[in-house]
Length: 195
Image 1: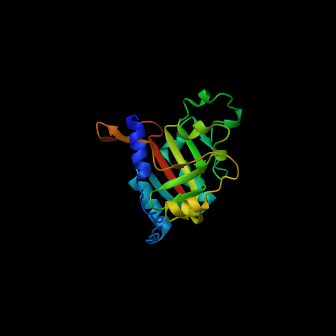
Image 2: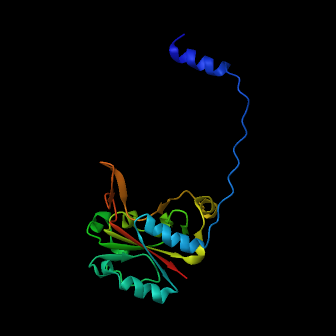
Image 3: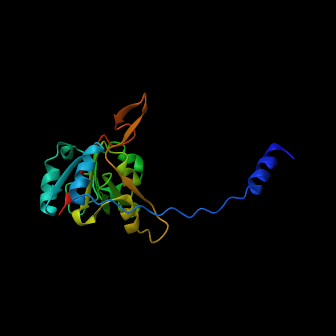
């Protein structure tokens, strides 16, 4: 018998009592989730804004210096002003010089400032959230949840699909143990809560 078989036989011979699955802790709800979400976005390196409606959203985004960039794309129906027609792009490499993208989020998470984006939203090119220098995310106030447990309870993927949480600009801290913003994606992330 080799050492692998000896170890496996010893494990099989061990008779342990079954342990019940741990109970999920009761979620902690602290204050208004929208206020907490806006604060969490700042903690993760983003800028957060709250606007009352679509008209105010368009005005607020237009006032951002990054929105005056020559190459910008908007997937947000209430946010006109994109200069890049994503439907006309055949090869995602044509987005290499994209300056800013505005993307709608399905929901926001108060505990960590993350925004859930469905893959279908990123059509026709998934690159629109990693290629640009600047990212604008838009989520409705009624779609802010308290924590990830609540978020996963609301996420639906009716067929095999794709989705992701985006939390602030790109960042990494594994380079000489110092935080670097924009290392692998957007250098800035502005999140707008509408309503």
